[in-house]
Length: 362
Image 1: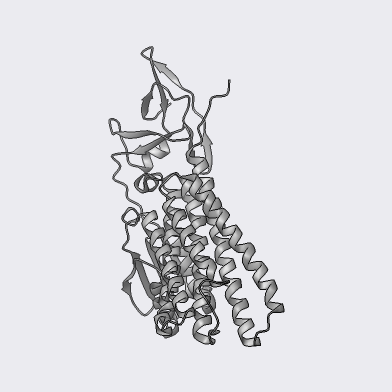
Image 2: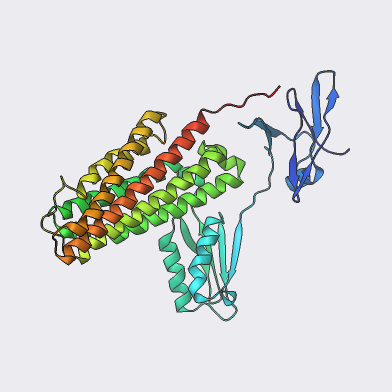
């Protein structure tokens, strides 16, 4: 059998997926102590390897082996082409975001009838919605966009922490306005909401790249399983951000009741949320599961208190506008607490997975 051989003293077999097929190859013993297995010729040709070239063999946490073409000169970039004549104007942004999330380094937009002003407005909106995308070339009939970001230069935990800082600052400003502060501090709430959304897209793009590429997985220093769980945390933070924005709009568009107190419901649950989410974010790196348990218990207790408060609004003698404001305020706070409970459960999943071990079944 033609091929390039690599040695291993411990491997039982190596499977390689090619053209949607798994190839099973037999181990051979040479020299009385070294096991060898041939690599698929097609894989060798695709990476332009030859005899005596080096490949890197890595142990994976699952116990499997990974073979990388260490000396390959082949460089590939993912490209997505979008034909505007095949897409309704209402869905152009959706397709651009899908291309971004796919991990494409090049996005080509074409149209035989020409790219008009409305099309270009959508392209600018897309660039503002994402991170690291710039126009490289453009003409009347095509636009080529490229990504300038190196995935490894944007650590997942740093971006998650940035999302947390944005939503927590938004909540802090809402509390200040609710207790008589200057409403102008909420003027940039829409910009903060857009930044949260942009970070969510960036993180989901990075997670997708980790799931597809073993080398990117290594550069991020996380496992694919954990990356998938971190993606769930990203979506949770984005939903929290949505309700932070709703609270900001509520304070701006409606008159805040004068009898609101930070020491009473519903505002009194906010310090509980602030301390709880701070503990949870810290435990993205730490392994203090008791802190996660305490945060989850405190959040669930606060949710129950808000539910009872919302039921009691029917019995309070309030003006209808005040009652409506307080009901909306309590509902958004309750949802924020619930999403943070979801985050605690995800962190328990991560903690349990980190402490799991593989055992041999005899």
